Length: 61
Image 1 (cartoon, rainbow, N blue to C red):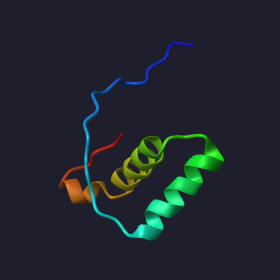
Image 2: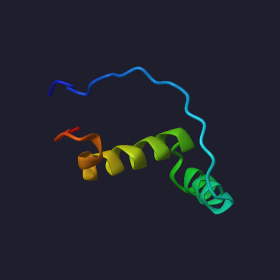
Image 3: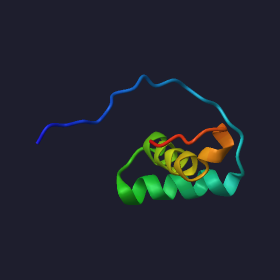
């Protein structure tokens, strides 16, 4: 089966979030062996996919 995953460039983003969120992400990182970067990226992709109206267009991932 051919891998059709689109490789994209990454860039750094700095945000300020509640301390509890940082704590929870660290626990999730430990329990899942996935990096915080991966966990946050997946969460943001899900958010964008379910709120594509915020983009002003029908944007499917």
